[in-house]
Image 1 (cartoon, rainbow, N blue to C red):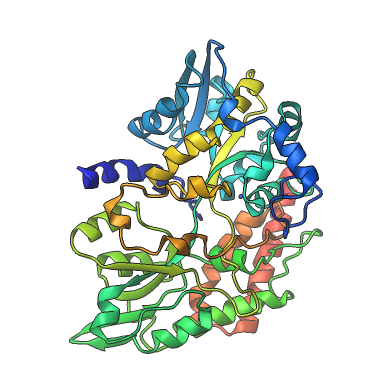
Image 2: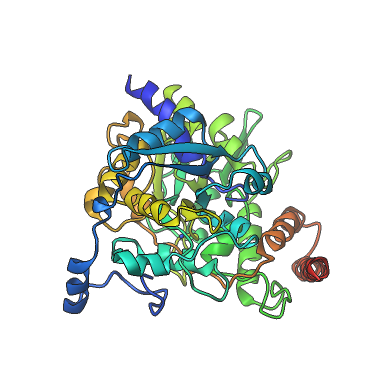
Length: 451
């Protein structure tokens, strides 16, 4: 029964994955830690507990989300009815275009991935929550400061809190124990660097009996490493910085080093196909990715005998302990909603310890710093047994890069350039120059469309 239950519930966690793929106050730097001074403790005692938020008001709150009706019942209605007994929660599906929903029945809340916040900011839909946080005395010290810092970075130049986080999607290094055992190679160690794993992959990548085994994959797409290095795509003047920022050379070179290992990119491979090689053909030894314990394909593979190991996400030598950037999601309030304060109370309660523990058991990793909440992660999930779950918290989210309104399109251009580069079809300088030219043209075209 446990396995069946987890197959049912895992979709809630997976559906928040960004399609490409989240500081307490405005004065805190990206290196801020939750305050623990005497003054801050006094403030915390005055702050309203998230568990205390609720309302007897009779109303309807619509939430735009891409999850199924079944998961909406489990993830929202069942968790919110205790504190909002007279509120009817309805789903506004993402199968309907956002502009069409806004014209007919604007949703009150957006179940929004951090990396998809630009969808809302481009339309000026996400309400700045700072005034309501202040009005109700919400304690933001409960959240990982790196998460809030990243969320604020999406309000380009304003440092506004655009949503209340309810989950993060941490990245770890997944490895296939069977392949390591088959080739007599020691499992990857915690806190390994990209270069450590590149060297380790040389012991694994090979062809045996007509089967091409890969040692290491760089990940689904470029934004994992780009965020880890906190690399901007475009400067404030609207010019591409890919060829001028030294960190981009590090990124491109790391890709070249990974796929330059004979066997790590065999004939027929494609950039971004590591997931298939890891879970379906089981020919990839190491795959850095969002933790997959509740992933449908992993559940099926595990039930068929797949032996998974996880350890910390690979880091760069000069950035120890720094993982990739923030992925996950939260609840943003629609500026067009006529029930903003009620929607805010819902969003805050959704971040309460009570709700967060329930979500954590489902497989949502909490954005809170509470160890009491964190220790409930995957509770009761037999597929998590034996995994080093400490790896999930073994790295912190990278500092946010300086964002612009054109980053998504710039990312697409960079990502599209990668395979030709690391397979030797173009050299580094030519690749970066071509990327710059395409990004600069894209920005010019976008500016012309808005005139």
